Image (cartoon, rainbow, N blue to C red; front, side):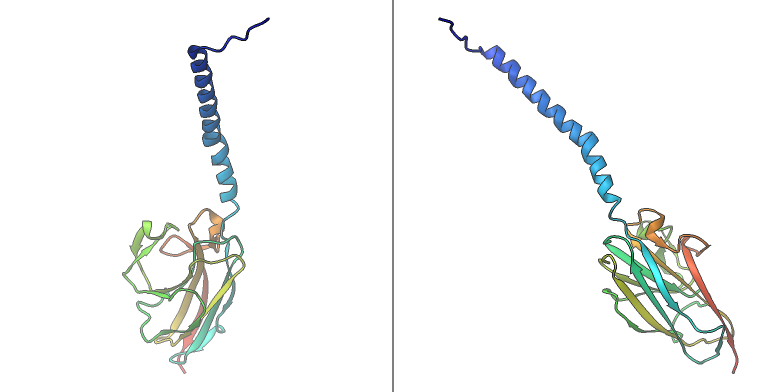
Length: 206
């Protein structure tokens, strides 16, 4: 009759150590190789893609002292983002008082008015890198901004002096990941070192 020898404590200890080493090796493999790649793959699928789909601006000439309207519509063509903003700025003004009025908007947050000299973010880094504003702007934003959702605003402008009147528009998704996180993606840059679209009209005396 063959007797089965029961493993002694030393053999059990070796088996336990080997098992622990195997578990730790498996954990470190997933922690170092699998999960980071898995995370980055899914992160790449969650980028916002802001796009200003429509800007309504007056013809080439407007009358001094006569109000005209500007409207902007923007959409997120990417995935859901924490925050997306649309900026309308006025490089020919030192302040917007009695010149620019917000008539309506459907953004989820109240518009933020930035006057000349106030601190504002730059280089798509939000408030992590701020500089004094060289000219005023109105920041419209929604938080969150879901994929495929459009928001718009309508302004009334009453020019107070003759000459060229220019408006800059741009849209930025935050967190800013890459070039797809802002619109436009090339062309003219403003003092914030961010790309803008420019619209101009000549203000003439009546």
